[in-house]
Image (tube, rainbow, N blue to C red):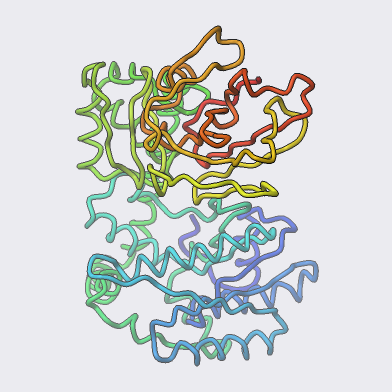
Length: 451
């Protein structure tokens, strides 16, 4: 880390090179504040030296401040002056008694950024050294582990490309001095002065005192965060080694994970849940999960964690987001039999299958287990009649998803279980019939079996 780095176009371009963006187009997150204006100006100057540099900007209009529209217009004028294309994105930030406006605004903002990565853009943010120290103290107060206390990286994956922070090794004072020297106009968001917000309190009340006592305090925090980051990387490598041995191809976790030492168990569970859900678990939820690891085989534990549910099935633990509904309602499938769609699954038809199409007097109905009870059918190649309960078990559908499996009826006649089984009385021997295609938007279902 370059502690005495001066902020100019040459040093900035060196930092940009370290981010390894190569020839990818850049999308600057432009709020209009001094940090992002300086970032845009540095990129604008860099483009004059390196004409192949592709730059655009995006301003996220949160609508939370009465001056929000004024700020958007400021960004539009600034980008027009420097001949940089700008997109203004309007978002609605959820509010509520238990919701942090700061966090919800951040989530929505990053959703916008991620969308642009799908167009090939690398997102460029103006985070700097002071932001690093503020984030450290915020997460320290929240009782965060190594991941929360570790340093923000100059580059991190986001969506289809990456997010980069070329100003991360520069201080706020250097950025403000650069803006003053180049006489750069910028907006001032008065909400950043409100110390009722945690980050603002740390910024205005905590860090100035510490930096007055120890002038290099922010740099030292950044150093410590870097060491913590390295420790986190070692933990992740160990967790990946354990997962390689204790998980299957579907990323399900073997119940043998409980044989690990207590510390190693916590490490691998946190890593696994972060991989599956994108977030680390709360301590209370993690402790509940660990308690359930030793539950008897006759039990079917469920733990709400990381925005989904962890369940055990056939000696493996699996995490999945909850389907919107576990008891979908039956429906008639009208002609011309276009695809049916629920919020979490779909059912469609393609040609050259083994299911005999319905006759003109047969109405196609899609029903579900909770509505029909335990029916029986004579599936192809199974040698006789089987109950629906038995068939769903043989197909290895997890118990909590069996009410979601679509059952196909011609009138009152039970003819198929989704795209997995066909009653032998309704086959088309010439394979000129229907092939059902069932898509369930979760990764907990077994794959289809050929009929």
